[in-house]
Image (tube, rainbow, N blue to C red; front, side):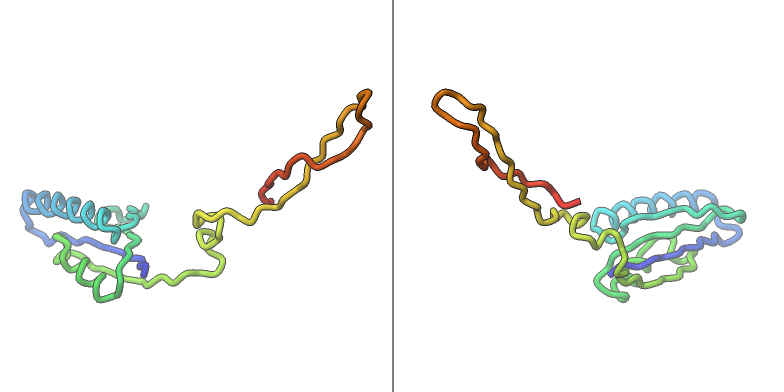
Length: 137
């Protein structure tokens, strides 16, 4: 299953900068682990006027419960507001076509003919010499 996850990080006032920096380093390491495990597919920082603390990520998990567990284990979890939207495949999604899924379209076979020049022993003839596969366009 895929999920769109929106994060808003609000650091509590009075939090020492060293604590913030430590959690941010731990968060980056956790994100790298989630990506390596195939759970975090992409993450973006939206361009918003208010700046700071926002991120949008594309996650994969077996269930909503697994995703909640993954997000709950993040080092910044105590400071985050999270909105999760489950994503279902769309019939017009370009990644659902056979060509983009690593499959080639069925070939269209076209016969090719060779004309032999006349000689003293042969007359002109048209005979198939080979078949060329051309991809459908």
